[in-house]
Length: 256
Image (cartoon, rainbow, N blue to C red; front, side, top):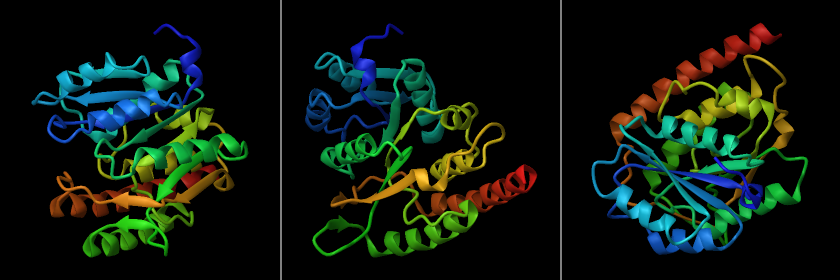
C-alpha cells in the first residue's frame, strides 16, 4: 500500500456485515471529511448490498478505504485483519468502531483527542456510564448483564475496568499491540477482553502497563436496534470469558 501524509492520521476499523439498510452513509462521510481520522471499512462477507454502499463511500473521500473479505469470518477476525492493514499502512494510531454509530462520531473523535493530548496513554476506550448530565440510553437488562460481565472481566484481566465491550477504542501502534493482533482471537464475542489481556500478558516481549489504559465516560450513547448479540450469544460470551480468564491466568503464572 502506498504511504502518504494521510497515514499520519489515526486509522479506525469499522467491521460491517449486512449493513446495507442501516449504515448511516452521511454521518460516516462527514466523519471521514473531518480530516481527523481515516476509516477502513471491513466488509465481512456480506450477502446484501453492503459492499456497494461502502464502495460508494470511498468515492466521496480519500480518507475512506474498504477491505473486502470474500467470506464471513466474524467480527473479531474482521477487526483483527483491519488492524493489521492499519499497521501495514504505517499508521501510528489505530482503533475500531461499531458500524451502528451507537457511539456518535464526535465521541469517537474525543477519544482520539484524549490519546493525542496525553502521551503517557497507549490505549483509550469508551465507557457507557450513566451519569447526571449524560445521555446513555441502554436497556435495563443489557445494563445489568453488562455490569456482571464487566465484574468478571475485571477479575480475569486483573484490571479495574468498567466497560470492556463498548465498540469504540483507539490505541497507539506499539510492539505489544502488534504481538496481540498477530494471531486470531479465540472468541468472536469478547475479543475486546482478549485483546486487552494479550497486551497486559503477552506471550513474548514487554507488556503494556495498566496505567497506560484509560476509560473515557461517554457523554452520549444510544442502544441501536438490530444487535446481532442475542441470548445465545450472551451465554457464549460468558463461557468464552471464563476460558479466556483461565488462559490469561496461566500465562501470568508462566511469566512470573
